[in-house]
Length: 65
Ligand SMILES: [Zn+2]
Image (cartoon, rainbow, N blue to C red; front, side):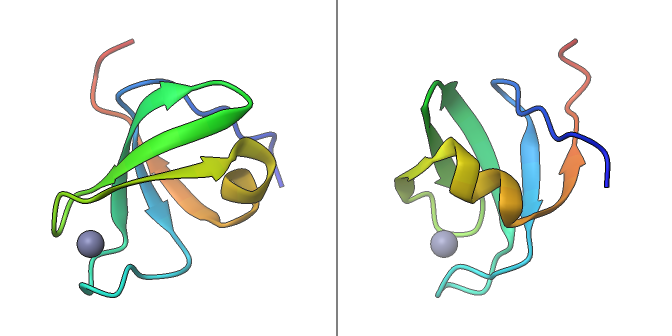
């Protein structure tokens, strides 16, 4: 698998769904921890980057490069 690089404003599709049913999250702050906002319910969560990278199914860029 390719190395995953999360960038701010990326939309991440995770393998696990949020309890609200959405699996899309937007990265809003990337550091050793990554803050993401659920695109289904708008709740934000902070996860260790290493753990988050492992749970990404796919990164959907938003054309912000
Ligand atoms: Zn949610």
